[in-house]
Amino acid sequence: MSRLVGNTRVSKEVREFYELKQKAAEYYRASGIVQNLEDALNKMFYDKPEDMCGYLSNYFAKLSQPPVISRLLGREVYDGMGQLSVQVDVYCTVKNEEKRVCTAAISSHCEPPDVAFPEAYACDDVRRSEAVRTALQWIGEPLTELLKDHQPDEQDRLDDLLRYLTGPFGSPMTSLPKKGNISEKPIPPAEPQEPVLQGSVAVGSVSLAVAKAAATLRSIPLYQHIASLKHPQPASELNIPLPMITVISCGKLSPGKLNLMKEVIAIPAPGLTFKQGFQMIRQLQAQMTKQLDAASKAGPASKPQSHLGSMVLSFDRMEQPLDLVMEAAKALELTVGKDIHLAVNCAAHELVDYQKGKYEIANGTAKNPDEMVDVLVDLLNRYPAVIALIDPLRREDKEQWTSLYTAVQSKCYLFAEGTSKSIGFLLAEPDQIMSQASGLVLRHTNETTISDLIHMTTKLKGKRLLMSGEFRVWLMGCGYKGAEITKNVAVGLGARFVKLGGLCRGERVTKYGRLLSIEEELARQGALGLCTEHKFPEHFEEVDESQPSAS
View (tube, rainbow, N blue to C red):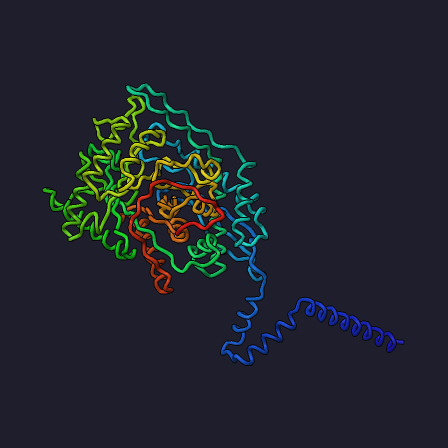
C-alpha cells in the first residue's frame, strides 16, 4: 500500500514537472527568445569576442523594449542669485530597472528686476515660494500620471499633453495695476502684464527634462537631438552662434549719470570659430581692465561686477563706454567694426518716468519717445560699429519703433528682449509679433515647451535668432537656470547669436565653456559650420510651418 502511494506521489510530481516544462517551452517559444538566443550564439561563434557576456549584453540590449517614463520627481533648488526654483528629475524604466535618466530646470517668470521701475514684476519671496510649491504639486502627481509609460522621444505628443494641462490646474496670476500717467506729452500706457499660470514652470521644466532624457537614452548630445526634432533628416553642418558678450554695464544701477546703456556688448566678426571669437573678447576685456587701472591715480580702479557678469562702470555720457572699448581694441591692433562689432542693451522700458512721459537716459536728462529715436540714430551714425540695439524703446511706442526701424534697418538689428511676449502667447496671437523689430527674442520659461520653440523657429522666416535663455532664431540668451536649454537649443535650432552675459562671473564663463566643447565635438565630426556675414533683414515674415525653415 505504501509503495502504491509512493508511486502515485512520484507520478504526480513527474506530471507537474512535465507540465511546468511545457509551459516554460511555450513561454520562451512565444516570446521568440529561443530563436534570438540561438542567433546570438551563432553570431558570437563567428565573431569570437573576448568578453562573451558583454557581447551578449550588447546584442540583447538592441532587442530590449524602449525605455518609458516611470515617474517624475520635483525638488526645490536655488539659482545663481540664491532665488528659489524648481528642478525636475526624470526616472525611466530601462531594461526592467528604474533609473534616473536626467535632471533639468528652466527660468520662471519670477525673475528679480534690476530696478524698481513702475511696470516691474512684483516678484517677492512669498509669490516665488507659492509658484514653486504649486509647480512641485503638479510634477508630483498629475504630470507624473500623465507621462507615465510614455517614451521620452515622443516630444510632440508629450508636449501636447503638457500644453493641454496648463488650463485646469490653476488660474492665471493677475497683473499689477499700472501707475497713471500725468505727463507733459501723453505716451501710450504700459500694456498689462501677460498673465502667468502659477506653477506653470513645471510644464517647461518637464518638457526640457523629457528632451534631455530622450537624448541621454539615444546616447547623443541634447543639441543634436533638438536638431533632429526640427529636421528629421540630419543636418550636414551645425553652426555655433556668435557670442554676444557683455563687457560693460552702465545702466540705472551704475554709479554714474548714464542710464541708457545697461549692457555694452562685444560681438566677434563672422567667419571666426567660436573659440577664436571668445579668446578675442577675453583679451579685449583684459585690456579694458588694464587701461582703467592705468588711468586711476589711486592704484587699481574699483570695478564692481553686475549679476550679468560684467564690470559696472561710472560714465556720464554715451560716448564714454564705447570709446573705452574702441581704445582697448586699438591697443590690441583690432579694428572695431571689422574684427569686433558692438551692441547696446538700452533696457529703455526700465528708464521710463511715466509722470513726465519721458525716458531718463541720464540723471537730469529726459527724452520723449520721438527724441529717443533721434538720440539713437545719432549714436549709430557716430558709431557705425554698433550693429544691434536691444530694447531701444518700450514695446508700446510702436510709432517710434517704426521710425527707428526705418532709419537704421540697413545697418543695425533691433531686438525687443525685456518686453517680448512668451512663445505660447505669440504662437496663439501671431499678430502680436513686432514687425518693427529685426528679430524676436523669446524665452524658454514657464509653460513654454521644446515643441513650442521648434514651432516658432519654423513659423518665422530667417535664421537670425537672438537666443537670450531666450529667442527669431535671432538672439538666444539665458537667466540663471536657462544655461542648459540656451546652449543646446541655440545650436540645435541654428540661432544667429547667443547672449549669456559677461566674463567676470564663473557661472557665466561656464556656459561659454560648454559652447566651446560643442564646437570641438562638431569639428571632430566634420560637422562644424561658420556664421556668414551679417545680413540686415528688411522685414520679419511668417512662413508656412509645413515648409523647412532656413538655417
